[in-house]
Length: 532
Image (cartoon, rainbow, N blue to C red; front, top):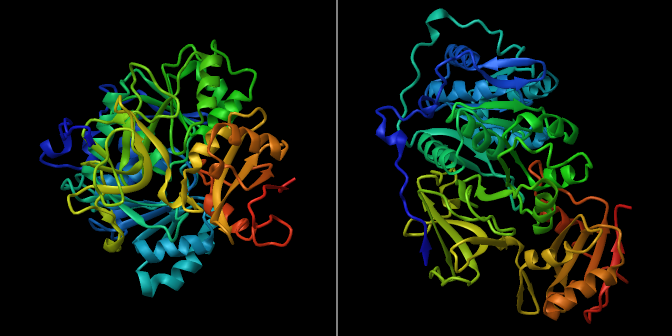
């Protein structure tokens, strides 16, 4: 069964020029603040002027429409203006995680072949050496710097007066950005996102979440990821709203700014850390109209605890790099913990079986999506583009659609555990474990086992006894879902957006059931400690 209808009117297509930058709704008074950053205010006029200047620089450096510009820079207004400059110039923006190592960056540069690389000062020397190595192979030739305060060799470059004129006309399917997937199941792949993709998804979110010129968005996310760069920034830019920018998430700073903000977007980890603060109160959140969570599953316990403390029900939504946002809990109406809502305007979803046959409500299967938010494909990797013959994108997320048409994400297909012939969905086991007092979070994974093929293992961020965890699961779920081993850790490994790195956990504990003395092969439970 398919859910969702293509009701959204594609504003970009209606325009003669579909350049996404042209859709930004600037306030009548350009002197109004756009970004509060440290001790400085950046106005909408600053955005227009600086992004035009940066576009002139890129043109003077020889960049032509469709060329890639790679940016591994710290979060700052200047970094946002660089992205906007690429849009204005018809260039393809390639943001790179600021924590990536030289080897990781080398792979992305080899793959994307940017004409210009912009980085910060302390990484410039390493990238210059790397660029010399890659120049012949990839055509990377220019490395410039851009600091958090806007200084650096990029911003101070003096382009000829004639180097930039009007914004570059773009077709709806011209590539606007390439965002690389996290690569937790292999090498990262570059998702090509078009001007149309950005436009329809940004407008759907703006209208669904009721963003207006009067909003003040408290922005604590990184901007090398779709959540911080597209979801957050586009909602503000498309509505003429104001943003308070923090360099990174800091609970003290977030709580200090909440009384002036109206919207906050975060990953589940942010909300857990806010709840650990006694000064998170309903009074402090009185001016807020909306808290949004995404990029990783929000625990129902976190949802309920936050609602009790603040009076606000966190709005959870679901999306991915390749599609932008697909579903959302309602702005008006009940938000259900553990569910990610209904399809956004213009997005259709369905759940299918292994034979690609659509399943009825309540059945678990692979989630597929379709709409103008869905990306063009993977850069230089057409064979990895997971589309069905009838045009649906295969998300590889396991989900079910309820009787009320709301969607529950059960897990990733790659995380499914097949133990003794039975399917075990890790999310189901994690939800039981996470209800226990003292458990911060858990990750359930499948590990090689000589009898069962795969055995269920629970990695738990807590200081408990294993029998407490095992008994809780045994009392709630079938016996084959009970972990064969419980490992207690101080911290679970996460990526920059708060997702647990199950690939690292599987590698770390790969021999747990084959090591002498760790577990008997007849399925007896064992416990272990790690990271103490």
